[in-house]
Image (cartoon, rainbow, N blue to C red; front, side):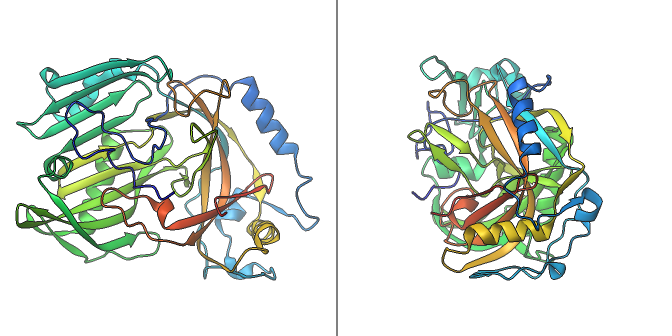
Length: 404
C-alpha cells in the first residue's frame, strides 16, 4: 500500500488531531529518557556481538578509522544482477555504537515549550483527551483560525504545528497543483537553485541552512544533529494566485550515522512494526516562514551508547548483500549509507508501536538504497514511496529488506 507522506489524515482539521498519514494504525511517535540499558537489551546486544556464524569464511572486520576511508572501487565481489554506485563516502563517521532509546512520557505536561516556540495561545485549546484503550496517553490540540495556527502535542512527544500556507491547504483554501522539482541532497547539487517564495526569489540552499539551524537550536538532541536530506518545490493555487512552498525532510544524524528514514516493516495487522522510519517534516512559505513542523512519530532520546570498535568491512557487506539478494530481479543500488535502524521493544504482543516510554534499540547497518517508484504525494515527503532498501547489519552481517 502506498503511503501518503506523513501528511495530515484529513482535509478538515478543526477539532481533530493532525496526524501523519504514514501512521496507518493512527498513532503518533517519539523518544526520551536517560537511564541504564535494560538487561533485555544488553542480552540481545551481547548475542549479536557473538553471532558471527552467519558470516562467510571471507568475512572481514575493520576499525572505524578504516571504514571512514573505505572506497567502493576497492571492493572485489562478482555481483549477480546487482549494480553498485560509483563510490561511497563514510568520512563523516565519528563513532559507531549500539543505541538504547525511548519515547517521551507525559510530554503534554511540557507543552508550554511548544506553545511558546510556535506562538500558540493557551486560550486556543480545543481538545484535551486521554487514550486509555491503546495506552497512548494524553493528546492536546490548539486551533486559532484568526491567526491560522494549529498545534497538536502528545504524551509520547509527538508535535505537529501548522500555519500559513499549509493551514490554508489543510482547510481547502489552497489547492495542490504540482511538485515540479525534487532534490535528493545526497546526489543533487542545489547551489544557485532559486525558488519564488513569499518574499520573492529565494535561494533554496539558504532555506535549507536556516532550517537546519532552527532545528539544532530548538530541537536539540544529544550527540545528534539535523541534516536536510530532501527538498520538494510545491506549487499551490490560492484562490487563483499561484504560490510556491518548500517541503523539507530532515534526517537525524548521530555521530555520522543517520537514523533510517527510507523503509518500514509492519506486522500484527499494522498495529506493530519491526522497524520504522524516523525524521522531521517541515514546510517553508519563505526564508523564515515555517508553516509546518512534524517530528513524525514522536520525540526520542538516546539513553545509552555501547561503543563498537570494529564492524564488518564494506567488501564483506557487499558480499552478504549479494549472497542474499542475487536471486531477485536486477537491482540498481543508487547509494550506500551508514545508518541506524531503530527496533522497538514491545512489552506485549498487543502493545502498539510508539506508546509513551516505549524502548527502542538502534543497530548500525550498511543501507543499500534502490530508487524504485515515485513519491507522488501532495503533502510532505515519504521516501519509502520511491525507494527500496537492503540493510546489512554491521556486526552480524544479517540482511533485512523491504523488497517483496
